[in-house]
Structures are given as structure tokens and as C-alpha cells.
Image (tube, rainbow over all chains, first blue to last red):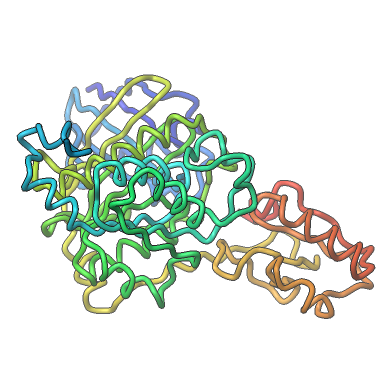
Length: 78
Length: 337
């Protein structure tokens, strides 16, 4: 199945892209997909990054074909 | 004709709405890139009382985005300058100036006196502090944050809705400020103005308040997204039961054998651990310079490298220190991890 992953802030910078389509061949929860996407990226404190599936903040849901994923780090600037 | 005629004409405002605005008390924490435009629109709308809280002074590098300040204000306290400017804009409004930072000690007491809190801060510690104090004082707060060309916006703790900890339960030490990353002045202008709009809707009881939703804005891509967020009751209950959970952000320095002098204010974070790290705020150097070793190399740091440079000048010229080196890029460059 295919999912679209959108990256924000520091995560987009570390991934060097703001969006990509991923091919997934097994059942994954949102938090497993998050770990896979962040794996290898130069980001400290990965557990501060939140995941949204189809515009809902939720790391427990099972990923389905066609889902739109967003990886959201907290921002501090003002 | 009333100065508020053009907004009273709206069905969402009307004379009753205007009366609500005149009775409203709004606290703006952080009068910077977000707080300046927010304050101008809230003052323009005729909000009864506006608290302006900022412990910082105007720097020339603030002027491109902190639209309340002029060249002649450089070096003056932001909260005070903001009050003086806004009083000229609208003499109906009562302004309260706070030149001290929001702390665990004063947060609940100050927040208690206002109806809505607007977060114009630039660090995670204060955002968590506002969040926790608003839970305890039962006040809604309007959050915004920026990273380079992107912004996040939401209303937290509104009518039992989600809080900041429901979105980001874990804090991070990556306090990356606009100072460090760069920002175009318009982005905090957009976010701060949207924050003022949320405040007005809350006060008026009009429209859809951005509660239970996190809005993401990318200015460069001209794109927006809204993410639905849910309350995590355990995050709120914990604060209600145990009180404000201070976010102290510790860190290790790469070189543990080296002597360091931290010239930031005591509340600034992250705080390096270690026996060889002295903490003396810039303003206290004259009275406490004897504490600094003068027979070994000491690296002096602050958040960005600017204040530490000043500190070295003072210590060299007034007290004859010749063993001090500036950490050019600020604390982030010497942290381990």
C-alpha cells in the first residue's frame, strides 16, 4: 500500500523534503511508521515529534492504503 | 461617531460585543514578533485591559518584525515601550506593564487576573508554564510558535478542550529561536494577528474558536493544514493534582574539563550541568567578578554569543581579565548531544 508522508519544521529539514510517497508492505501502527520515517534522520529527541494520520493526531491507529501522514515537531520561536 | 463604528456594524460584534471587549482583560506574554501585532489589534479593537509582559529590551535586530518598536527604542524595556506606543493608539485601554519574566512563582497569580492569555513567547519552558498555569487558573490561552517559514497556532484549555501537553506531552530542549534560525518579519505578523483574532472570537463568543485543532501554516509554500487534536485527560489531571510541572532543561557540555562562564539570566535554558560551569548574569558581573578564575582559560557563553562578547569586554577593560574566550555561536554550539 501507499501512503503520503508530509514533513514539517526540523523534520522536513533533516529529511531534505517536505513530502514523499512511501510503499509499505506490512501492517504498521502510526507510531511504528513514525519510527521508520525518523530512523536515520539527524533529529535529537525524536519522541517530541507527533504524528497525524488523515489530519488526526493519533499514534495508535493502524495505517491504511492512501493515508496522509504528517510528522510534526514542536516549534519554539516567536 | 464611535471609533469602533466599523466593527460594531458587524453582527458578530454589535454594541453588546463592543461592551464585552471593553470589559475584557488580556495578558500578552512576550511582546516580540507575535506579541507586537497582536497587541496593536487588540488595543485597536478596544479591549479594556491589556497586560504586556516582557523582561527583554529592544534590540536593533528586533525592528524588522517587532512592529511596535522604533530605532530610538533600542535598549529600552520592550513592555514599557509597547505601553507608551499603544497608549497613543487608544487611550480607552488600560495597560499593565510586567518587566519581569513569567515564573513558576508568579504565573498563576498574574494569569488569574486576566480572561485570556496570548502566548508570544519564544521558548518551550514558558509555553509549558503558561499551559500549566492556565489549567490551574482555568483560563484559555492562544498559542503560536514559529520555525523559519512555518507556524503553528491553536487555542488551548478553552471550554475544557485540549491543552498544549495533549499535543506535545514531552518537552524538548531544542529551543530554536528566530534569532538562531532566521525569520521574515511577516510570518510572526501573520501568526500574531491570527492570535488576536482568536482572542476577539473568544471574548465575543462568536464564530469557531480554533480549539481542538492545530493549524499549520507554511508561508513560503502558501499552504495551510488543520490537524484535529484530542484531549488527553491524564495530562490535564496530572497538573490539576500536582501543580505546575516545571520544565527544567538540563544539558551536558561537550568538554567537561573546560571552565565555562554562563552570563545568561538564571531562568534561561538549557542549563548545563557540571562543577566547572559558573553562572553569573551579565548584570551581576561587576559585583561578582571575583568568582571567576583568572589563571586558566575560561569560555564565556550566552544564548547567541552577543552578551558573552559584551561580558568579556567588561571583564577585560574594567577588571583586567585576559583569560576569557567567547563562544561565538552561543550555548547550542557547545552542548553535547
